[in-house]
Image 1 (tube, rainbow, N blue to C red):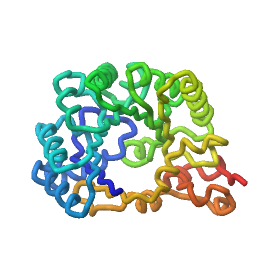
Image 2 (cartoon, rainbow, N blue to C red):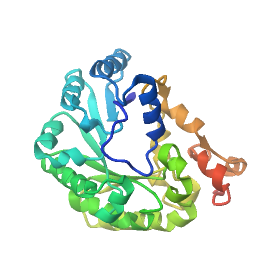
Image 3 (cartoon, rainbow, N blue to C red):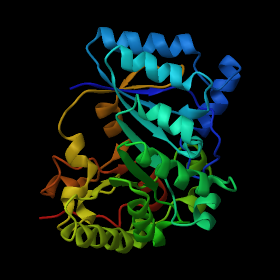
Length: 309
């Protein structure tokens, strides 16, 4: 199965401290005078992918929901047989009519919640009131019958509260969560030490959220899913099954289309912008593990990692 990851643009109603596309947003403004693809450009990219047999698409940004043509693009894609996933900060779904309308077209929503409370989430997004809008947006989508996954990007602001944030997503009705170590591009790269924590500091809290989810799932009929992204397998000690590397290793073609950049095979491109170490050759997980984002060892070395025999 082939997938399309289509960036509709870079315009956003948040200003996240870890945003990986902030530099691309600035470049788009310089090159084209705006931050987003036109409606015609979006439709052209969809039809091009469809002609090559790609029928699953993820709309990303920026923030897709703030586009005036948002619902029209959802309808256009669905009418041509695409299965739609939407990545969003969820704020616009605090308005029930939009949540209901989008739910008629989208198969899966991935909504970013970066803390269990307004203090942490709003400091992360740098937008006051964003926590309450996102939380209400998730509730509205769930009430409309949608399948919702949460997304947490780990930062120095929130890594000690991963368990509580996952718990909040459970209470809001999400079906699972993806927890991702930050990629130090864009804003995260410009403010590396303020944004990006050390793996050795993060891992006790990652293990805590794993135990929390596993305990919860023992007592519930419907499991809450957990996926850990950009965390190398050597750090997961018996809980490797939660690593996104296992899903990535399935070998499915995933095409990434950014603004004004040639399309990429994201399976290959992701590995090219990650790094592994000489000792990885002796690790039992070497064939599966993708390593870490390249910027991390450039700043902090390889001392936190080691082979699993």
